[in-house]
Image (cartoon, rainbow, N blue to C red; front, top):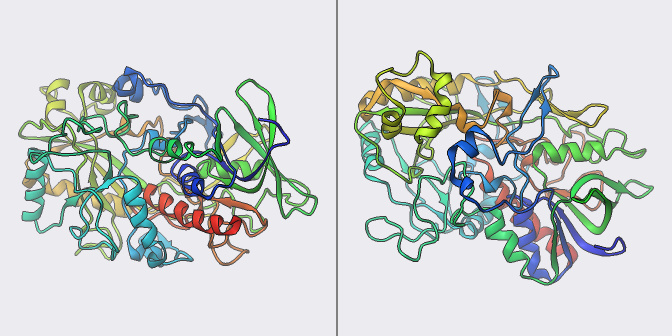
Length: 526
C-alpha cells in the first residue's frame, strides 16, 4: 500500500458494522479500503474446543483494560476479520418499537432515539435476509410490524426444547423461535440436509464456526465485498490516530501501525470508524489535536460516555429428564420485556444459549461450591443441562465511560448496579417456574464462564453507547446519519451510536444501521 494512494471510503473494522458497510459500498465501484486490526482467525480444531475457547481464552485479545479503581481486567474482545461476530451467538433480534421511544425503568430513563422503528424497519428486513436469519415473524406478540417474513424458516426445536416450549405455553407465556443467523438447510425432521453448510452441532454459541455455517461478517460481507476489484483489505492494521486538516473539519489521514511494526498513513474522502464501541471511542479520544482538544467529534464531551453492556445472566438449569439436544439455541420469550402483572417496569427477555458440555462445567465447578449437588458428576450435569440467557436493559449514564491514561491505556468506568432490579425480578420469576418446566428448581447455576469474564466488567460483548447519535450537537457526537457533528467526512457505524440498548442482542440493529448509513454514503459519493 503506497502512501500516495487515495480512497473514496476508508472503513476501520470488519465486524457487524464495518463489514456490513463495506459490503453495501462494494457495488458502487468506488475505491473502498478496509482496515482490520487483526488477521484471519485460524481454522483449527481448537475452534470447537471448550477448554481452548472458554477456559484458556485462546482467541481473546491478549490485552488488559483498567476499571475505575485502576485494576486490570481482560476484556471480551477478539481482533480478527469479522470482528466479534466470529464469536457471537448469531442471535439476531430487532429492537421493539418501544425501545426507540423514551422508556421508564425502575433505575431511570432509557432515552428516545432520533429515528423511529419505522425508519429502520426496511433495513431490519434487509439485514435479516443478508445474514440468513432463520425465524418466523408473528410468533412474538410484542414484536414490531414487519414488511417481509424471514427468508428462512425457523430452526426446528429438538424434542426437549419443544417440550419446554409447550410447557411455557401452558403457563400462559408466548415462546417463539429464536431468530438466528446460520447457513442451514433442514429436512422434514429438522436435521441438517447433506448439502447444508451448518450441521446443527452444539458449537453455535461463543465458538467460531469451523465449517463456516454461522452468519458472521467475514463470511457474509467481507469476503463477498473483496470479490469487487474496487475493494481492498489490509489486515494487521492497528489504527492509532486520525489526522485532520488545519481547520479541523476534515479527516485527512488514517495512521496505522502495521503487522511488521511500520507505520502507514492512508487517505480517503470519507472515513468510517467501526472498531467496537470502546475502541472507537478510544480512537477518537487518542486523535485529539489543537482544533479538537477533547478528541475528535467530542465538542459535546459525550465521546466515551454513556457506555452500556446489558445486564446479563447466563444460567444453567438442570432438567429432570436428560437433554440430548445438540443445537439448543432455538427458543426465546419476551413476555416480561416491558413489564409484568406484579411490576410496572421492564424486566427483559429470556433466550436459550448453546448447549453446555462437560469441559465447560468442569471450568465452572469452582464457582459452584455449595450450589450443585455432590451426587451429580460433571458428565451427568452436562447431560441434563439446559442453558438460558437472561437479558435486561442497562441505562446510559455519563459516568459510565471510556477514558485514556497518560500511556494511552483504556480505562472503563462502570456502575455494575445500574438498573439491576428488573433483572433480579426476571430471574426470580423464571426460577419460580422451573418446577413446572421439568427442571430441578434449586439447581439454577451461574454460567459465568460463558461470558469469558474474570469479573463482571469484563463482559464487553454487548458494548454500546460511547459515540451516541442525536439531533442536538451539544448532547451527541453524531447526527442521524451517524456522521460526526464536528467533522464533514467522519462516520461511526458500530454499536457506539446507540443512545439506548434495549434488552436484546445489539448485532442486528448494528447491521441494519450499517446498511442505512451505507445507502447514505453511497448517495453522497455517487
